[in-house]
Length: 182
Image (cartoon, rainbow, N blue to C red; front, side, top):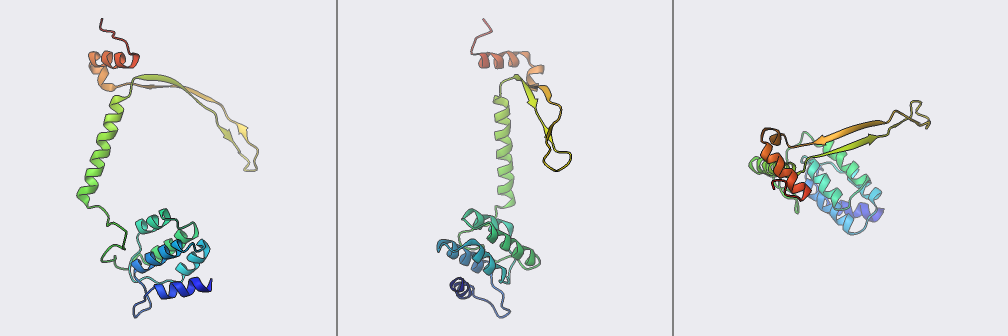
């Protein structure tokens, strides 16, 4: 524990106000993770830090994906809340890409929309039966009772096929694997 605190004290350069930049916290957490420090010890040390810049959610998510957690992201979220009125860092921390521009974000949304439309247009028409069984605990004491079972028919069909019967026939032909036009 004392080694980790000393390690963090040396690794976190503070400015005149005793506050540290976000990239120092990121580097320190990464170094502690690389040194296989225990998560609670890292979290306690992070709790003692005062930031000079705003900590953003994406930084916390990246550190969590690199192995921090579950207490360290909680401590980082506390730092995020405390730093919400501070200025945004001038440059992203090392190893952290800046967020995409609005044009790039728009392109991602358009690509996702295209993929979703392609996927749904390739789905065959189908009908299936969906059975939903639910259990309720009205008392909150673990006395589970079965509620009525819901049985419903679920149908998917291409709306464009209603207006274009030839399209519907070709779609069925592909699904069945038979040539119905003969």
